[in-house]
Length: 245
Ligand SMILES: [Zn+2]
Image (cartoon, rainbow, N blue to C red; front, top):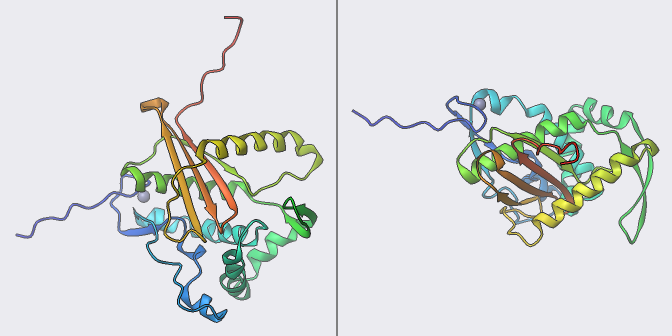
């Protein structure tokens, strides 16, 4: 009798896995045909991609969020040439097939001026669906944790989307808190090893502290060489001290 193969469990739930889910989504890595259409030969940005075992529900559930995330990343001002390749190939053909998503992203955009410290650019600012991005980043954080440890993360996740700006005057307080979080995330992960076989598209660093309920994990992700996201994995927030003790 053949030995029964022990099936792997899904990275998100107790179900048996029946597929491998790419993390981050495979679609953000320009494929060979896309590169060749721009005259770039002999480069494969889809080698050694990270995958986690996934059940059918968790592999299918997020494809629309994946697509949205891909658009927002490739349209971002902070990306490198690989992000531009993605915009000219994958995003352009997706737009031609189904213009609704791009139209809805651009429908609430407004002119904006940004600076990278040396140059000033005229561009457009789009309102980001943070709920959608948060769901996508929660999934990515749990998948990376699973891939590193072999265990599911049961706690919370908190994303700091570093490439997002708060531009409305009434968002000044949010802008300042975000700047503090961003600074902490940079400090916490500076000098750490970068993981990822295709760093022009994606790499990440990870640092962990504590055990059990006190365990805290900080992930810093970099997409297209300049669009950063940090994600804190934590169980519970420290109790606020009250009174005069
Ligand atoms: Zn599942």
